[in-house]
Image 1 (cartoon, rainbow, N blue to C red):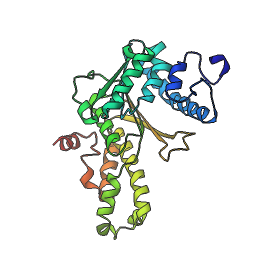
Image 2 (cartoon, rainbow, N blue to C red):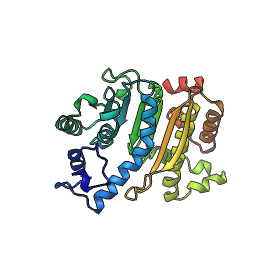
Image 3 (cartoon, helix red, strand yellow):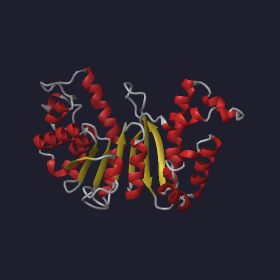
Length: 286
């Protein structure tokens, strides 16, 4: 089967690709499925080096995927990496919709992936203290986790001191809502022209949210890179944030974070975007 499709890697599960609709039911590739396969490989090329680095430290690496949905990412990572290179490792899918958790469990059983995959019906916030998850987590992912779920995933990763974090942020209306609410009192600041119009408020709020997230991660000792997921034309949200933990909290990003919140009138979101400074962390936990 794979000999007919040079785009597909020899070790991949044909049945999985059918279940994910990357292959048609009769095992063929069409134009749409080729596009999906290209997207999968493009994302995997960013995550695979992180998994290899984690695996170099210990065999039983632990990855947590927040807002897992149908766990497409988890299944692909298990098929391409964990199955062969990290059989002692485990992928944990966190999802609040019970029907998706159950369907993922059934698919894992069908494919023989159950030993390396777990699916939990939890909110991201609940997962921070849940005994269902191991204490040490190596990699945290959150792809298109809507609203504040991406920020909850960041909080989870910070609590667990995850070595790597991979985020494809989705819609987040909280910052835009605060910008909109405080617009009148910010009119004396010429910077408010950046979000004076409704459309700009939404777009600028989304951009500011991700900038604040990056500063927050840097303040907690992470090295952050931001790039674009090429080939994801179907989605307006194609920003990829990758953070690698380097150990020491940095004062400068923390200062910049607080300065941005003050400048833009977003002080009430300080608890959401708490920095690595001890005082900030204490206030966030109150």
